[in-house]
Image (cartoon, rainbow, N blue to C red):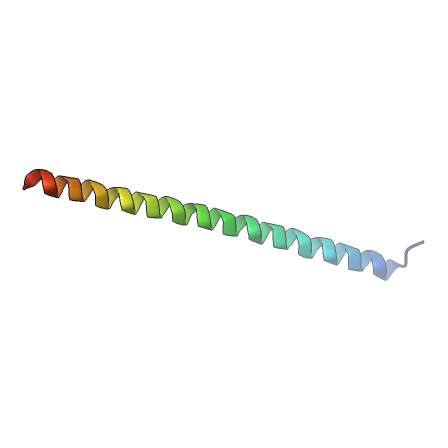
Length: 56
């Protein structure tokens, strides 16, 4: 049978793995939101330049 402390070590390792996965998921979401913001800013700049050219 497995010693008690081994079970505790495995539980701690599993918790670390879960936290690492959660951290990676949050980082992926932050990257997605940064991309959306960049696309929005680029589109806004494009629209503004089109409007400027239209008014000339």
